[in-house]
Image 1 (cartoon, helix red, strand yellow):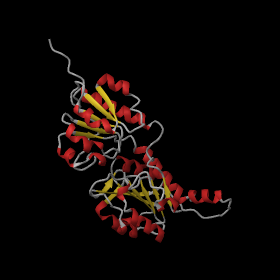
Image 2 (cartoon, helix red, strand yellow):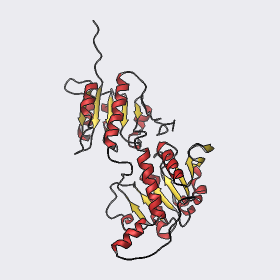
Image 3 (cartoon, one colour):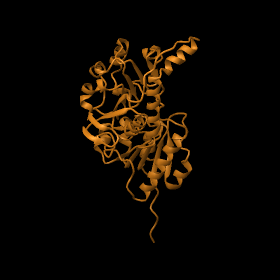
Image 4 (cartoon, one colour):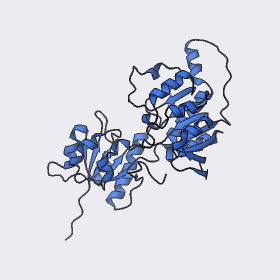
Length: 333
C-alpha cells in the first residue's frame, strides 16, 4: 500500500516584531511550516525535533541577508522565494552557484511604483513641494509652472516596474525612452531603448531621469558624477530602484551645484536614512521611506502570490517568476 508523500518543509523568515503572512493557516495546510526570526533561521533550515531539513524558504523579511550566514545549515534547501522585487540581498556566491531555485514578487509592485513616479513627476513640474513650504510660511507667491505634457522621461530599467512606469508616463503625455542592457528600437512600451552602460550620453535628453533598475554589479553606482553632470539644470532625478544605483556623495554635490535641479528619493544607500544625512535639510531633495510600492493590501498580495507558487511546487508544476541568479532578475522581463 503506497503512502502519500510528506508535505514540503517550509521556513518563513520574519523580522522581529513583524507578523507572519496573513494566510499562514492556508500555508500550513499545504506544508510543514516553521516561522522564525533571524536567530532561529539556521536551526530551522537544518531541521530539529525530528523534522527534516527545510526544502523551501520564504523571505518574508525580504531585505534580510541572514541566509548567507545560515547557508551551511541549508542542506535540503531547493527553493527560495523573496517577497520583494529586488533579490540582491540573497545573491551571495554560494546561492548563485547552487541548484536552489529563486523566485520573487514580480508584478505586485509594478503599478504602485509607477503611480509614485507619476506623482513625483507632477509634484516637481507643478512645484507642489514649494507650494506646501510657502503655505507653512503663510506666503502668497505666484509662479509659473512647467508643462508635463510633452516633457521627456528616461526610465532606467526595462523590467516590469520600468515598463509600467513608461506606460503611465506616456498616458500622461510624456515622451518616454528606456535604458537597459540591450539597446533596441520600436519597443512597445519605451519606443527607443538606449544602452544603460552609456547613460551619461543620454541623460541630458531627459527632464525626468527615473531609476527603476535592479541592483547588480552592472548597475551599482550607475548614476555617478559623470551621469549627473550630463543632466539638464532643470532636470529631476527619481530613484525607486535601490539606493546603491546612485553615488550619493556625487548627487549631493550635484544638487548643491544646481544640476540636476531636484531629486525624489525613495531608496538610499543606508536605510533608514540617518537623521544627520544632508538630504533631510535640502529643499530640492524629496525623501520618502522606501515605501513607493507599499499600497494598502500589499502584504496580502505578497502572501497570496507565495501561496499560489507553493501550490504549484507541491503539484510539481513550473514556478512563476523565477529569477536568473546570474543576471539578478527575471530574464523574460
